[in-house]
Amino acid sequence: MAIHLGCMGSAASQIAENPRNALVGSYCRTMAAGRQVRWWLGLGLIGIGAAALVVAALLPTYLMPRLTRIPSDIHTEAISLADNASVIDVGAGLAGHMRTETGVPIKVQTLVVSAQPTDADRVTLVATTRLLRSDRDGPNAMVTARAEAVTLSRTTSEPVDPVGQIKLEVDKPADRVSRSGFQYHFPFDTQKQSYLYFDTTARRDIPIDYVDDDRHEGGLRLLHFRQSIGPINLYPEQPDMQMTLPASWWGLPGEQQTRFDLHYSNTRDIWVEPTSGAIVEQREHVRRFLARTVDDPLAVTTLEIRTRFDEQSLAEAVHTARQARMLIRWGNLYAPILLAAAGIAMVAAGLLIRWRATEVDDRDITGVDDHHPDGRKHVPVQDISVEHRL
Image (tube, rainbow, N blue to C red):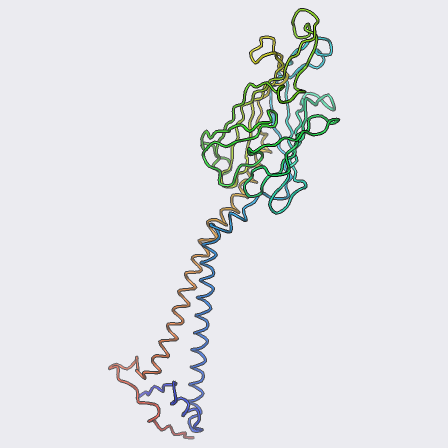
């Protein structure tokens, strides 16, 4: 008959102190040490699992909203094309007659780089835009150019101090222009609603409205926004936006000096990856014209273009948006799910290990033989005489 030797209490001490029972004492000490290791292992698993559950809960609710930021190191270039643009004929103007040239191929180069001040909370973007005639080379290809600097919050994408600047001419200082609308980057988690979007030419914050989400690029669902501007007269707010010439140059009788103001209209379509707020493509239908009034029959178009991203610019924008979206989704969705699953598994394993260790302790105290067919108790260890035989 197998006899279970309990290893708890004074009985274990008596066996351990009896030289004849050294083997039993060693067994008891080994069992006790094993129970202690399992007890601490279970406690450690419970602690680590609980910590994983806490991090899983904090990642999407507290940590990611603070960690999701516009990159501080930005260097992007986009090329937009217009196949059938209209531009003012400079040669005709020099000859004393204002005329518009049509059918001109245009390339729009926009380079955006980060600059100072940039820190953990804000990033300053410097954007240079050049409109070039694709049918000409060198200085004669330039139609117009501008440079702009704006500082954005890296978490909200909203403009912050210092006030933005716009520079149109090399030999003149930049104009300080405040704004509150978005530009170059939409907010993270962009919604299907209207936003204020800053227009550099008008120098105004103008609503941009949600249109649809029908477009997909590279597996990304894009939100389509449209902004409609003007026509508006730029002269009242920008005194340089006018041209005063003899009336005959404008097709009017006489030679008296006549001022025509620069007017501007634009229909801007922007497609945004909503999770990251990244702009994937921008198309514009821009018209600028010199006129005395918005509906002046003698208006002279200085620029009219319909632009779209070229294939490389679109592909690079899709790639950038996809990477940003993946990082955000890992922080907001995938990582919390994995951490929660691992945390639950570790807590469950820890509880099971501790329960098993406690169950063994209880058996040792009660002396019940769980494996005996009739459940009888073991003989108390202090009543057993163990003889050491060679």
